[in-house]
Length: 133
Image (cartoon, rainbow, N blue to C red; front, side, top):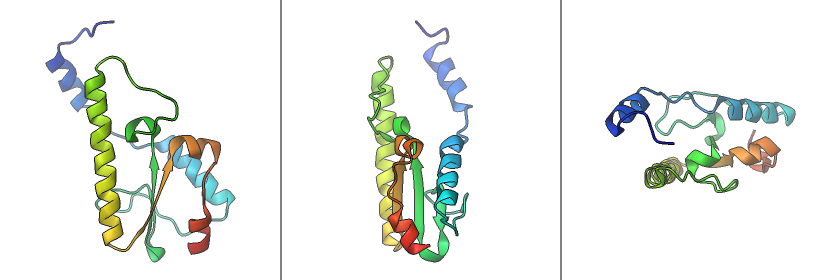
């Protein structure tokens, strides 16, 4: 189906859409933390890179990465329309994730990245968090 807006109009519309985070995935991760008695985390910690959760006392940053947006091909969801745009978008996210990870590692932090699909299945290796919290 063809878009009813011109490329410029669609771009203007999409610029107005602001990210609201991955709340449902974060809520599931919170439930997993509680279930495993993992305490000491904070959300919305004001630091460059915006981790979803931090354990400031132990310098652990946790990222809950959405599979589509961060380049996990678990469900093989690759848009056929405007594929070049979406591939570039996802690659920029992957590159930014790598830069943020390197930034935190240089600061001496432990980085944990969990995929959305693993969070949904509760298929997470929480040993690092349980050992440090």
